[in-house]
Each structure stands twice: as C-alpha cells, then as structure tokens.
Length: 394
Image (cartoon, rainbow, N blue to C red; front, side, top):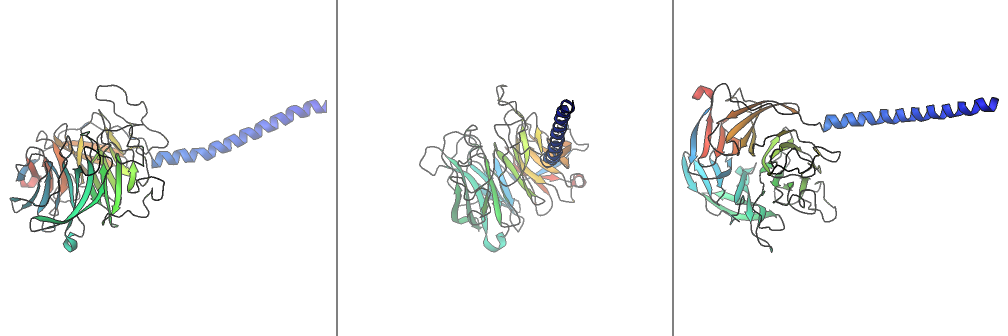
C-alpha cells in the first residue's frame, strides 16, 4: 500500500518540478521578448497627411534645372547642385555657373549624376563627394560609384574614385544614392538593389540594397561589421534595403528613407550589421497588386521606424533645427516624388504624430536641405532649387 501511494506522489513531484522549470524558462524568455519589442518595435500606422493651417510660399534661387538631384552648401553659403543629366552648377549670389570636371556618367533609366556632399572640413582640403551611375567595369551597363574631387574656381580637380559597385547591369532602376557624414571621420552612402531584389539585398557578398561606410579617404574602417568575413563586401554597414534616396545624421545615428514597391516606403535607423528585410518582409506589394510576401516583420530583421501606405516615393531628408520656422523646428522634411509636395513629419519617440503637405503641387521634390543661414531649400524637378519662405517673410 505504501508503494502504491509513493509512485503517484513521485509522479506528481516530477510534474511539479517540470512545471516549475517551464515557468522559469518562461520567466527568462519574457524579458527578452519585451526587450526586443522595446529595441525593435513594430511601427505604428501613420496619420493622414493634411495641408498646414497656413500655406508656405517660396522663391526660386536656382532656376532652369530639369532634374536637380542633390545639392549642398559651401562655407561661403553658395551651393553646388547636381543635375541628373551630368551637369554640376555653382550657385552664388543668384548667378548659376556650370562647373567643369564633372564625372562621365551612365545615363540610363534612373541613373545619372546623383548626390553631392561637401566635406565637413572643406575649408581645409576643398573635397566634395559625388555619387553617380558609372559604366566602368567589364560588364555591359552601369552601377553606382562614389568619387571625390577638389572644387576651386568653378572646377573639379584631383578626382579620385573611392568605390564602384559591381557587377554592372543594364537595368535602369534603383541606383540610390545619398551621402552623409558622421562626426567621427566616416562617410555613409547608399546603393539601391539595382532591380535585382531577389539577389542583391540579402547577400553581403554582393553590392546593391545596402548602406556603406568608408573613411573619408575611401579606405574601409576596421570596425565595419563585415570586415574579415569571407567574400563579404567589407564596406557594407547595413543590408536588406530597397532604394534609399534620403539620408541624414541625426543625434548620433544615420537615418534613411527609402522607396518601397507599391506601398511600404520606410524610414530606417541604420545600425551596424543589421538586416532591414527587403524583400523577405515588406509593407508593400507588387505594382500589379500581387503579393510579394505576407510577412511584415521577423526575428532576424530590424523594423522600420515608420512606413507609408500608399507610397509617397520619398527622396531627400532633413531635420529642421532652424529658429526661422518655429512651427517646424525639431521635425523632419521628406520630399515626395509621387504626390509632388514636401512632407513635414513630427515624430515622438517611435511614432509619427503629425504629417503636413508643404509646397503642395509645386513639383516632384527630389532633395531638401537646411542651409547654413537657417533657411530651408528644396530641389524640385522642372524648376530648380527654391527657398521655403518663413511665414513672417511672406
């Protein structure tokens, strides 16, 4: 009789122990899941974009530029502007002068002359950095390249090619590309997936669908995330991107906005070695309405800060720090190619709380920059570069 009672008692004891261990495992797992949700939260849906209470006006500061792709400011507050067809202009005191020495471009589809960024220490070395579509290489077609050159007296000299994506392709889409500097002597630039979504973005041995980081002289930083990994492109900083065409350095972090397919444009906070999911996860679909994937997130992917559905086709990116626009200060500006306006976003933590359409209907907005004088400048296709006028100046 004692043995009959002992066996059930032992069974109950081991079951209880098992439940106890299971509870311990659950207790250990829960904080990890909560931590992941805190560090990689699912983005909230955006509010609808509306017109501002008071309309903004503008004035043209550099006209007759068909597709002004990128621009930046020199220490004397003049600006350099790229035109996708291969021309670079120096805009100073209302006068536009074509710069000599621009690179030879592969002018195909969305390719051509792309972004331009003035070096942080330009006053000391006169370097400017340029991304463009290049046909250099053995294969037919082209791919995105990064170069630098010295600018002086209306001329680019001492040209140096720093990076050239491989292989070339005759596909005409998704070249990227934006350039931004951090405060530690690094340069970041983006290259789109080049129309090979199922091949390039998820493969770190291939260029395309990536954000890259280099030292200012073009060498690869020793602490890049894939340095030493077999066959990896060691300049890669993050991957799984589709086509980033906006980039800023914000409070110690690199932020990009990038084109989705039909829906699913994103803002991503770029972290070293992280995978942003394209095309294995997306909030968009194919242009014909068919499904790319049902997945929106996954444990190996970093979620976007926010996304747009429908797509606005974002290009250009800026954070407003100027006191000239108090109603916009600390917000973000993104150009919309599709809907032809400049979008203002107010972001609280990881949530977009406000969206406004500035310069609505002016044209396809390609780039936006806050100048050293505190004014906001906007590159608009078919017009050129315009200045956003503060309300008190209208």
